[in-house]
Image (cartoon, rainbow, N blue to C red; front, side, top):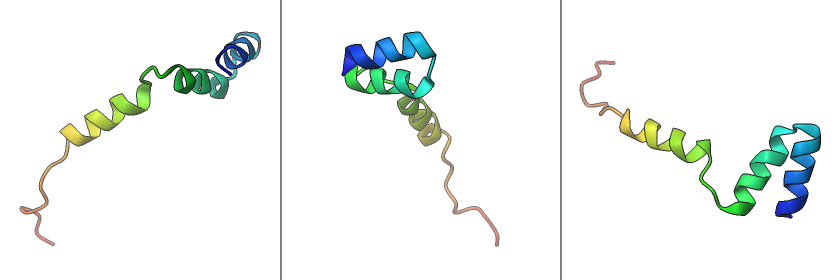
Length: 50
């Protein structure tokens, strides 16, 4: 599956094939980086007046 997805990506430039390749190889993608940033930017809601 890894070889197929990389070959398909290299021939077509399809982003979904690249993301599949990253998932199959177990390399961290951008999703994990975005989740870490989202968690670090969280603020408590105690101070909000609604």
